[in-house]
Image (cartoon, rainbow, N blue to C red; front, side, top):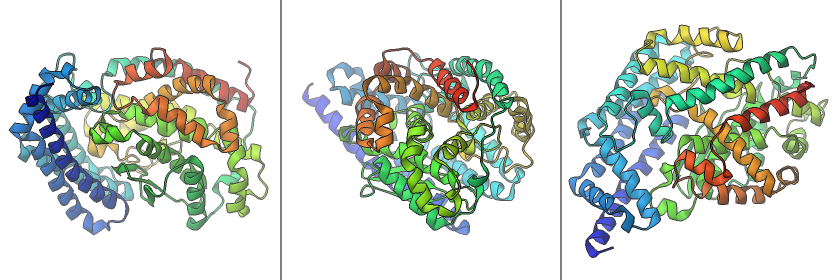
Length: 507
């Protein structure tokens, strides 16, 4: 690579560093906004966040920077591999944002930040009308952004496919629908079989009262067990649990405590710790090359749901944590056996809240959201239709109907920042089911879990799952890990085998 190319690459990296400092500051504001910030202060915090996001946007709109990216992209094959990833990602960003002015970017950020605040209040008051107008603005902004794309060869042209591409590069609604239809075809009749099983699973103890302090002790025990580095991370409480990667050495996760549902916090900690481990164990050189955001949400969700479900709801993990749970919650667990705890955390029944759903019915929570947002973006339904259609689909797929907006269409925060994220959760389940097969071929996963050996598990994840997630597209990545093309079959086989054993079904 000649001197000019070296100088252009250095300019690009310095610019990325400067932009990342604004992202860093914005991440701190966002974390505060969703954890400690008082209700009346959120509007001002939102304005400050929009300002920081706009400044970050302006830095990457500088003509000298964009011209350097375009020149380097023309000489992509001359660059080192990680530099190729960076320049390819920046080229997509340049093309997708070239027609967006600074004023537009600021207006977009303000819409998203107002939408979060309105969503939170609407959920608290269980009143969709509070959120409806801002959600319409989010829809308008989301459509406008993808309409302004200057697409690279091979990129999608459909609006919803473009929104999906922001979260799951290279995946289309048609591909997702095909896999999700397979899930419906196999799981709807299987769920009916389970519901007809005479097996009774005890769950009464799951709602015995526990204190916040007890849940805090369990959360910290879980984080330590899984290998989360508290010298490079922290945790806090929030309305809707999330993980924020401030920097490689400052990864923060959140949970919530419910007095009458300690299992909710247990599994939100497991889920968010999966995200956090991905961030803490990602390669340092990937952070240095500003490419860690290239991993898709499906990749990330595959890891969080791997730790939450494939590990956290396994018989081996329950065996590992049973003594700790009994010690921390003696008034809850005094008359509860290890097997009763295992069956209770895997109890399958249609329920209204996605984050509290069992592994099997969770699938339908995602399909419902996918079908609604796809129809919404296509203009087949309006924002005002959402509560009624939501309730209709819950009745159709799960045989239950929300009694209010809080337990219905307002339960999730995601639509306050756009559309296309929800499919990543189900894709994540499919991805981790594929690489769980590979992992079990190479290490004794059950023995590692039962003995608390997460060093071996995390090392395997780091080498096989994390190492190329920032570099490859989702379909390339899963083939690289497993040697096989993407399929939902492993996920469906896993669910049928697991729940058939729990409920005594003959398969």
